[in-house]
Image (cartoon, rainbow, N blue to C red):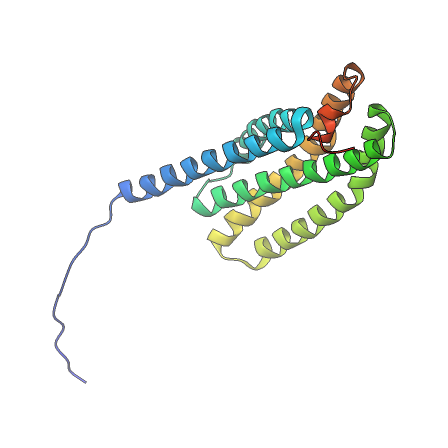
Length: 192
């Protein structure tokens, strides 16, 4: 059907719109990281402080890997990276909760840390393995935006495994013998 086309409106989108979205996403990520850090320190005390240090180290290592691979950090890629930070915190929470259980059973701090890490490892391994499988499926079948999300998430998961299992563990085992009261690991005075 011959129908006339009438121009109703015209809009030009410049590069500043993408930069604005990128800036807002990075700002949201920083706020999220700060809130998670405050939660970890408030709820887990000394282990939470160590976990925050490990997360800062994790962030630098992950960004270095993104630069070396190289990975283009689109908005979807930033979302994958922020999600991987959440998964890194999840691993620390599992470890700390298992450690608290062992301290309540009456183990020493060093013994509780060893048991906490070994008991949490199976859950951490399984959750990260299922997430990595999902990432590989998204990379294999996804579009470019979805692939960017999946690649940054997969790199973040692998680096977070290193961060939670190695860095946090080494720091806690280094500091653990110096702590003489388990309240610094239990998180609140009401925990017995």
